[in-house]
Length: 239
Image 1 (cartoon, rainbow, N blue to C red):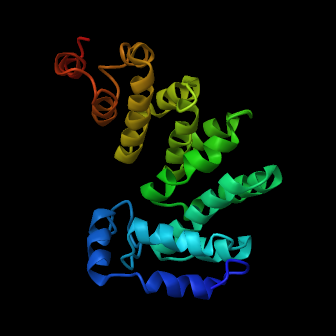
Image 2 (cartoon, rainbow, N blue to C red):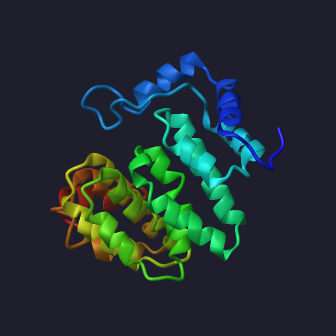
């Protein structure tokens, strides 16, 4: 298949040729797709990430119409593939292409509706686009009623952390301290841990006044790499 004008049907056929019913069952359970769970109703066909990346390499030139069709799919791997294609195109694109992809992404957040979909794309599109731009959109996303938009807000800051910029991560994490969802606590704790890998003092300045009140999951993720004695002090609220 030529990369010039890939079709949605050709891409779907390539995905299905790599699908595994056994893997689909494993993924359905892992991503909590049962009634009342965060991924309720999501459908997996059992395509693992390395195979998805192979399809991206084959069909990375898919146009916006095709990507939009994949992103609208009820099948998880099709949505994941759409996002991986967008990431690839963003990384290779000119300035105007990057802006178009960024806007397309923010216009389709309702379809970026599981944690792996957010994590594979938010830093590489939203965060990367905002590296040299105002970042107020992250505060809007952090206030959203959508669990996934709130996760986009904090995980997008990974792009800034990689550049040694921590202010936005700490601000958004502070805003999310009262969030009701464990998946937000995990994401914020993960980003705080990434800050700590680069600047332990900056992380401890954030944690010290919040250690007794922040969600335990967030705290545990944030201090995961601390020495055991220091970690235990934070868990007791005495650090």
